[in-house]
Image 1: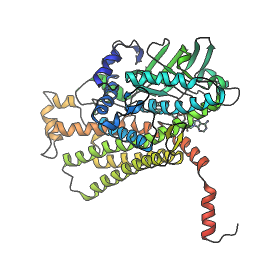
Image 2 (image 1 turned 45 degrees about the vertical axis):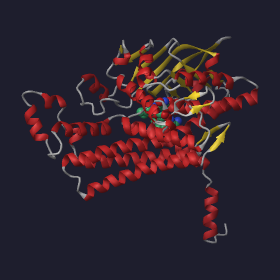
Image 3 (image 1 turned 180 degrees about the vertical axis):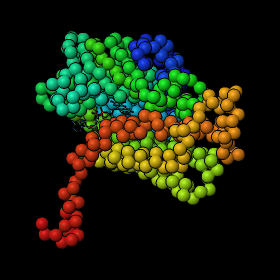
Image 4 (image 1 turned 135 degrees about the vertical axis):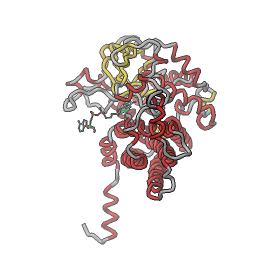
Length: 473
Ligand SMILES: Cc1cc2nc3c(=O)[nH]c(=O)nc-3n(C[C@H](O)[C@H](O)[C@H](O)COP(=O)(O)OP(=O)(O)OC[C@H]3O[C@@H](n4cnc5c(N)ncnc54)[C@H](O)[C@@H]3O)c2cc1C
């Protein structure tokens, strides 16, 4: 089933959740100024899926149309449709749509549970399929929680047990888990949080090798929202002062699991090191591939903003600045092209189409470099005003407003308010959590580079050079 954004919001409003914003356990979280933009962004995923057929494919599992982000990809075309969906979402919302790690979790747990059942004769895959059926039927929004708080990074998990989500108790009807996941994109605004391992583990560390799902009924889960300066602006109100006022900053939280009971039906990997690695590897490549398409969408949004800024400043004919726009388009299409290449040259893993590992990881590295360059171009085009401008409150102030209006006017084709809206949107791109999100979301670049070093066939490249220069070595 595919539902409307409004249906998702109404369902969410019925959940009782412990959500903290700036030290306060908030009531009516759906209307909170820091939470609502993330909800709007997720709601947008529903509304866009209703508009385009390829974003709502037919699922044999439930015999109905389902959201592309809750679907098991089987072909390169499936993956490409997902990438297009994400690029469009990123461009139109200018922020994270939050359901991407959920999609990665679904397409990672599916093959890992299948492999595990074949190896061990267990029933993890059936459990997962029953749960996935419910997700698809109700059109749940899912997120993916991997990153543990980790504590002192020089220690192994068994020497820093509390810093990694782990099993506290094994019962007949399920397990009890404790720990915390940090940097969780939109987890508080989703129906389902998949919880996956943060890394591979060694023998003796089995208690951390777990994957499960939590639902709003589970007790002992606390969401503590990020508190960056940008969030304060949202609490101050205004119509457009925050720049991306509908969909907000890229909003994350720390999710604390305080002795949370998870029934076996929602435990998909339990103390199995091989399945742990399988889930993690697939998640990483899936997320890095999708991340490249998302970056293309974000860059598209920045290109739109940059172009509008040129017009609002009366600079749209300046060749040197237009060239900057062209460079931005090159980076966007390049990131998208890498994602499409990874999808096209991917592989089948127990019935799921996965992106090409090397290309997906290259998407992360090139995407991050490109993102930095694009932000520099945007800043150059925009001038200094995104970080120096007065506020919309000054513009509306009866004493100073007319003067602010007069002195901030540029091209006659734009009112000062219109220009200020573009300026605030660019401020959002330049100063919100997007840059760090782009760098570290989906794993830091270093993690992708380790994959690239491991996977690349450097010997064959050496051989090619030896042959070309007749090097007898
Ligand atoms: C905006 C945003 C959204 C995110 N969304 C999600 C999400 O939805 N779900 C999720 O699970 N995660 C999410 N992440 C987390 C992301 O995957 C992590 O930020 C990333 O894996 C790096 O972890 P860290 O930030 O804890 O860095 P740290 O562990 O603090 O590392 C800092 C730096 O040191 C390096 N480093 C760390 N330990 C070592 C070591 N032992 N040896 C060598 N180098 C090391 C890292 O590579 C990194 O460059 C998000 C992050 C951001 C910024």
